[in-house]
Image 1 (cartoon, rainbow, N blue to C red):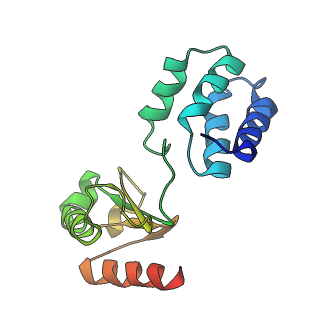
Image 2 (image 1 turned 60 degrees about the vertical axis):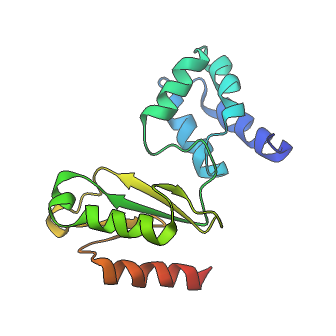
Amino acid sequence: MLSETKQQTIESLVTAKKQMPGALLPILHDIQDAVGYIPAQSVAHIAQELNLSRAEVHGVITFYHHFRSEPAGRNVLQICRAEACQSMGSEQLWAHACSQFKVDGGTTADGSFTLEPVYCLGLCSSSPALALNDKVHARVNVAKFDRLVDAARSAA
């Protein structure tokens, strides 16, 4: 169940942009920025206000990897899994992260990290790359990965 505050936030964000052409993506971005994810309970309201079906709204949310349907952990770690990064070792980073966090993508049991694949961070010439809490890091090896994760844990 959504808190009244979150529900009001979502309603005001939808109302603010529902008249603009192509409003769905800007509204979804605004909701995720404000709430941290797109709650499933909000899909019907968004659909009704934009005169779309719930399936259309849900389809957009699930099509784009950027959107979350569940709250993220305190730290969000995105590892690039596109071809350039794969060729430079991102699959080994992914396996290391999964082993460390005991998840194969998703949020750790303690809620401290959410591990997500991404398919290009724009650092192809400096791969492998990852983003930790929206800060991009290039030429990441396992040792650098461990330092970044340890620093994020310490900062919390």
